[in-house]
Image (cartoon, one colour):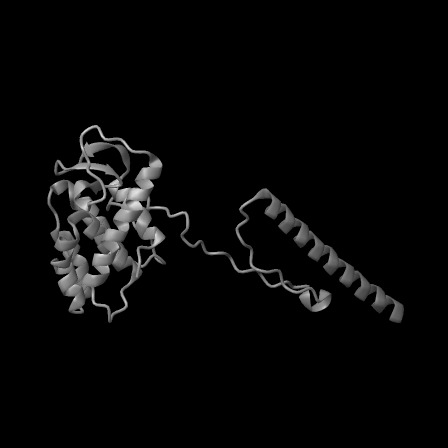
Length: 227
């Protein structure tokens, strides 16, 4: 398994992103998306600055360093819900891979106690400022994305948004004139990334309508001639 786009968006929302070094809630020098010297990727010192591109690269490397320990800690002979796996990566990113591997979240999940594992996220509640994040991770682990997207922290007014998350597309309605016009049903609409594609879609739809009307006219004209 891997961290999903939704899980990645939730993690970024929880960590925030800063291009100048700062001290986090436990006075550890941090930069980018929650990257510290302990990551082994960069030495974070007071006054350090990085670019957005460097921050993106650091985050990609950091995610890889935490996803792999989560995979190894959870039993490989079980299919884990994506929401639970994403929440585990978020937890490990915050408490470290060793802390995660030794956590009650892992022990309970591997023993088949998923309800207990989900509640065990809330055990990591120090400092107090981290509690809303833990609650958000717990809710993420418990709630299928098909029901609700996660919030970075419980109580946030809006869920996270992932640009590459799938967006449902409405199914086309049946054409009541199809038995007469013999025009095949239009394909399901797809998001149009550009004006050119939108225009071409409109033109294609217009062509289908004109074709259908022409067929209907021929049918009616033929019926009158036979009469």
